[in-house]
Length: 488
Image 1: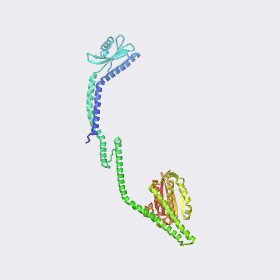
Image 2: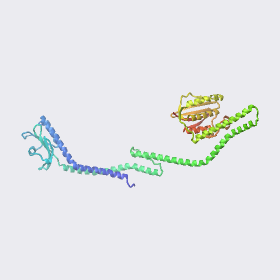
Image 3: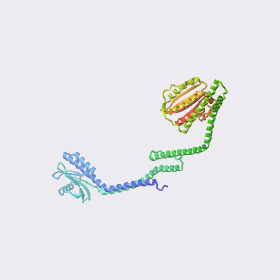
Image 4: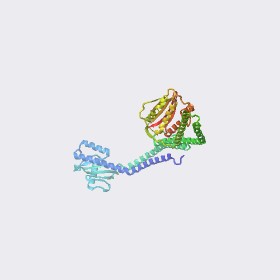
């Protein structure tokens, strides 16, 4: 049980509100009902006077139709009417004893009004409270002169207003007690209905405190509590996801600590690969240089061959060093990526023009649709390097029909550029290693065309620096390399 129960507070507030409203009604009934009743009587007398005055002015007061009108006034407002002419003869009356009322009218006219009980004092009529001492009945009486000169008197009994107020208060008290009882039952039901989802939310939050996120709010109403419940559900999911991410990050941190011991091994492996790649060209350069120095062959053709080998191997080493420097810059994050808008179709077509002679020499045909301008976002220089790596690989590995197929596929938010070449597919065990530095599927063939095994590592570093996707797909008749750029 909670020390300060919201359910109990809610019930007490509503019951106090109901009791307070009933008490207020009793107070208002006692203090204002009598005045309100007298005011309504005054208004009824004034309306009756206006009706009688209009009928006398138009000469309709003696008609049978107006007798019916007077009957309605009497029955509706409980008003007695007396109209007398200048000879003090009753013209119209609606009471059983018109002589007594006439005497009372003349008494009012000659004696004047009782200022203490005067209610209205107009030019044509007066109105005051009068007590009939014979019957001990209190009346409101209105008398004066009509427009045609007749005297009139209107009289209405107050019918024991104080007793009426007392009866009304007793009835209201009984009704109030019943209302409080019914309200108590309704309050208990409503408070339970309102506080039940709140208690459910409290239990859910308690479980969340202990990192139990299985509990969910299941209410299907549309109130603010349901909104709060849905927010707690979302908070629970977010906390669960965040804790999951933290655990994942912690797990990754443990893996990073484990990988820390492998860093030196990776460095040694890198140096070993570099030294291995450079060992052969250095040995060739050294051997052929010694041959030139010792003049093993004196003829000019042999010397030219030796020099060509030295130059080729030096160029191979130079290219490898440049690629390693480029890869190092990309992987270290020091290379700035200049995102710009450019036409990738124009980039591809311009490079194709430079390869025309090489393609004819190798008897390779290139297929590419006549694409219009396709604008993308990226570092134009680096994107060209990616395409050049793909296209160069396609040239070096094209076989069979010797066809290279270039496609530009425009999607909703991106563009997919692919380079396909016919030939042998890449062995499945080699696909996952293609993007590693110095990895070669066929070392002999790679050596033949001067490959270093760094090109695809550069592609990987460039695409990751632009946060874009890339990959390779094997087909029965060839291989497709692809990359994605954002549409501009």
